[in-house]
Length: 438
Image (cartoon, rainbow, N blue to C red; front, side):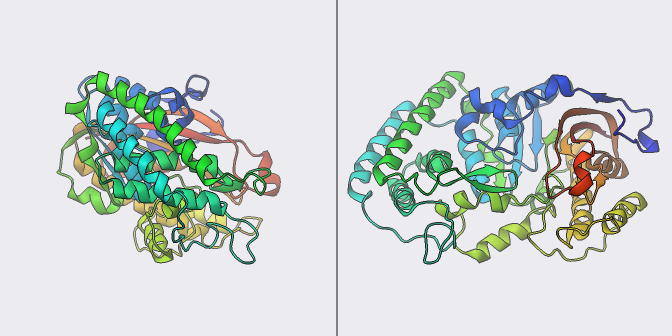
């Protein structure tokens, strides 16, 4: 592969280009046909199929897994489907809520139907009430606003549904929050597009009434009901991974896991693409009450891996190898001006954080256990950052052996990662690293 320049330590390792086989089912969109996985479209995630493929590749001796960057819960849910215990960690409170709700196997049709009936009754009395709106500046139309995420009638309907769900005092309350989250893009003025939200065409005129929003919520609940029926038939009650899903940063929570306690790690850390998941999930975080003010937002941003520039990261005194220092120097000294002058600090901080994560994973994974990382390369100022190979290098430094690497997708560079002549550079790649603990 012409875009792969392997470090000497990996010269004899198998590197496969499997893009023609993997590219269709690696993206999260493949989950749209699978019960429970389809409850919420987590655009940045990978598919259930990929997790099952990795588990099959690892063989039949995997009884306990870990995903320290759980996102919407695809890895623990895919493990649950085949009877594998899986610990998971997620820093974003909305995504953690989503993952735990998907992993819950205690739902019944009878209980769900009873809760829906109660919700319908509550809505008749509160749907036309006015509720206090979140303080987020662009949540709805304000004086001198040019753009806003939700028309006021829509936002008030969302807040009414949220209040009714809160008053339900039912084990299904958390699930109905997910139902509500699943319609936010349908009723709002934006769609998720890369690392931000993009306004829909004709969004100013596309106004829904409160009743229309509530009707869509109740119709979407029917899809959840069908999936609950499916889960009941699978008899997964005894293999639920819900209680093993914890909220917090990987850097904070990994040290609390027992040494040599998992057989495998299947995960995808945030990519080094300046993507701030806090930003793109602002509609969910604010409307569903996961953040109350901008201080909450800032705390969440600073708790994440250093993969974005929304925070001015503190200088870290950890060790970076010569190859990485040289790459950062090339980014700084490139022909063009960086769109954000903190990008070099972000790159350095990202790999320093990954060093800490990998060291903890080496401690947690039993001897001869497996580490599988889905990761993508990035590019700044026309300098390619081979994140997959650099991560493999860091993993080798703390005691892992690289078994093989599979390139599974290629994609265009974002405008933030290249400009001008950079648009003619080769596409970036997404890879799966397979490593063994020694």
